[in-house]
Image (cartoon, rainbow, N blue to C red; front, side):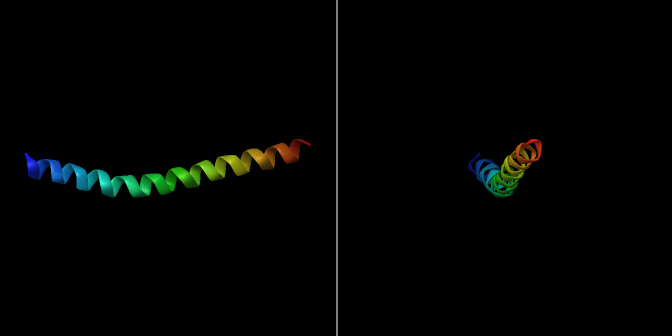
Amino acid sequence: MSTLESVIWHTLGYIAMPSIILGGFVVVAVISMGILSLKVDK
């Protein structure tokens, strides 16, 4: 059981970092696009 748990935690760790980085990039892109669209509308 402990081996399975360690495998699960390692997998979650490897998945978490790229997900956080990609998530932050997407959030920044959406916010910047929203600001640009607001400026264009004005």
